[in-house]
Image (cartoon, rainbow, N blue to C red; front, side):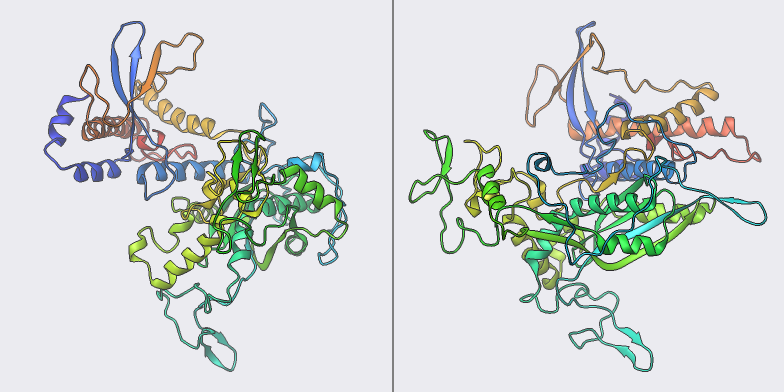
Length: 544
């Protein structure tokens, strides 16, 4: 650890050092580890970035993640060659799977719902890149799409006044003209009639709906369209999706696909809780002898997940427990590959809110929220908290069904999925959905690309970059043994304080940035055109 930096920064309070860390792009919540060198018998304390994607937790890590996603988006959007296939069949970065695992065992009719429009049929091409168009002047254009999808309405919300020809400004449904900064905007006009349950169910199953939309779009596009999509909350807290899609599909076709897309949830009935509710506050209990959950009063065995689905399949009049559909609002923009300003603006818009949690839509400090905003979040969370999020969800016990793969460690009504948290409000999965063929790279590989750009710049100026894998453990015979340091742990040697770890990291980051800026000046003298790259930002800090 740098003694000079420690001595200098030790004079300042921790919050000042933390602010300096944010300014220099240093993680403010490093995870401390003791690293033992098996060759020399020495050890050292190493701080590892927390990797948080939320600004409220760690602004530098959240910004690093956002910039990495921007690079990933740009690299795959308008590529003109087919990406290399991933080394395995798993999604590169969380592409939704096409079918529910139960679908391989339970056969249901594939006939489309009568209330859903039919999908157009197009011959399929195996390509993933978009087509090009040649203008009369010979210039070649490679367009792609920027699509925004939303969910339907759950009730009237406060809105800005809009202009109707011949009538002037029309007020909100509550009869008031709201200003653009009104805290009431997008909150329900009448919370008692707002369909919070449906809003919660739609949020829980939104990823599956998007999966269906992508499948349908590919079938109607005639090629395997690749996408980089970000799930975000609207001001009314309903999720919506921004998607960069490679290639182009007719606007009317995209609207037809959105209108025809739906997802049916074939789950046991969970309209009303049986346990843990106003009429019955008790919850099912685990019977060790029967190795099953039983009714707390009668001792009767609760049906297993498979038994509940068998009963559903045996009922000829059974209906899906929930059907998710897209709303009528859809935005479609064409993006041309060589219009860099528009591409950059769209990428910035895509990744703008990645650092904010769903529950932070109105602000990250709950104490500063308007009462209407706080009540809206609380009402939605009250439904999200008790509804089941998956077949394995412990909330199924509230509805008299034993969850899939449940055991004695399952706590009734306490699912560990973050979908039930107030912070996420039903969206427990990834915020960024990237298809397998977008770039053919993992995030780790994209991060390595950024580091490689900086390494090459430093090498060209005769500067050797610090070995980022110096303490690696992924070798055949690992030299270093890592052990996390628990809070309050005391060892035989001095364990640096949080402030000391930040001080050392800040000093290292400043040194890296200085070396990088000097190297750029040597390799790109004044007057020469600047070197542009999509693989790294202008500072060495972005590669850490």
